[in-house]
Length: 612
Image 1 (tube, helix red, strand yellow):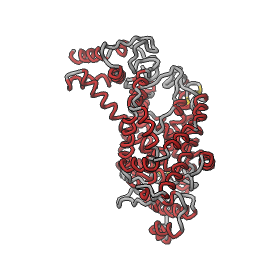
Image 2 (cartoon, helix red, strand yellow):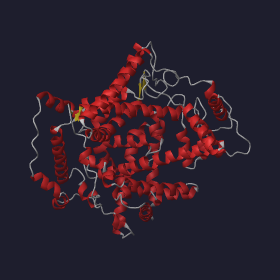
Image 3 (cartoon, helix red, strand yellow):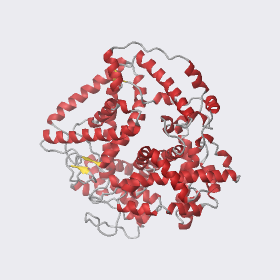
Image 4 (spheres, helix red, strand yellow):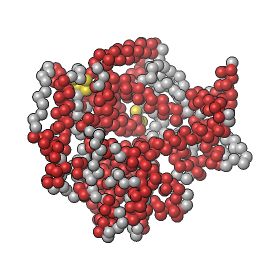
């Protein structure tokens, strides 16, 4: 068994080679909640110390009721307190009601402060015949949404990035297939259920102090085990982790607390050290530790270890093994690629520099077919060189109807109709994002943006800029990430300035209370979101949307676009003289008698309006 010093030495070497890639992976993991610590809070910290109901829900899910009760916001009440809130409003607590029940009820009250949510709650009251039952229904909905977010996204991505750290020990590059590993095998749901089981078991054991600590280290290797073999059930993954950790729990605990110095430094730097270095460093160390424990367990004949048989995750494959696994690619490499139909010089210029073509035509069909062939051959050649993991040697064979990764490959040309449809799609997604944020944080439905329609053109414009101007950087994910941050940040800053100049100083967003903001126009949180969203859009969402839009005939696409553009132009003309303004849009002082009414009185008020 290697010493802690040797493990960390190997880990630092691995981290040095893959630092930027691991940094982006960990930022994404923090962004979607795969990693729950204070590191990512630095980018969304506000000066008024706002928090949200999601933090309290997570605390309750982790059994920290006291922590949930002490979670408050600066301008509105989300969690019950027995004293005064930061806004100096007293919270009345009914005698005999437990703190946990009161906490949940106040969370529901917080969720129902918008007209939309209050109306929904009123409907639930009508259906159930009881405000108490309606509250329970809302709590159930909130927990279901959080549950699926944790299980289907956060926990599954945790397995994905554990595999990245294992592959990074041996291989230099991470092809697109590494990210799509679970999707290609159709194991996303299987891994989700396995992680769910481990999560629930740890949650139950955390109700006992000693049991929670012990089970943390007994289950420690579950994500690594699933990263190696995604077809293992949750029950078996837990058992295998327990077998591996037998006699090693204290050792793992000591290795874990050896990072306490980094933890203290993280506190001093408000989480920046963890976000930028120590979290990735810790993961590389435990990847080394897993490999050592796996080796010891196999040599000792520990039960069930024979199922960990992803041989080439730990050693290079021979040419014979790769040729056998890539037999279909070897055959394809011997065939000539199809000749591309002729296109004009202007079309060739657009395709080369901006990655676009006027229409999805025969040229693009042949181009993509040849591209898929080149991608397969390239992966084969890189596998022979030993710079990427040979995906086709994975011991679990994919289903017959495997999702072909070439079909979502990002190095493609986008047609003009597809780009325009994606502009509206990303504008709508951006609108949904911002409306959703305000529903969660401010408990109000707010039609965000200058325009009145369900779209935020700044998001669509950002997506187009990334797809077109950064076309030549698509094969460099790290550069794409930082360039997306820079370009989108520039667009947001310029748009904010332009709106203020042309609309008499009116602001449609203001980040003055956010950490690391520039004149209130852009902030660190927004830039990181742009980087993460830009990478997700370029390497996954845009190719998927393009696959859908490419199946629409040119005639139908033109009709759809004419309708959308006409509505969009009318909205712009109308909004130029009557911009979308008001509370939560340009007015950030969230005050009003209706919002301050207790939940029951708001429901009664709405009912009276309906009856009147």
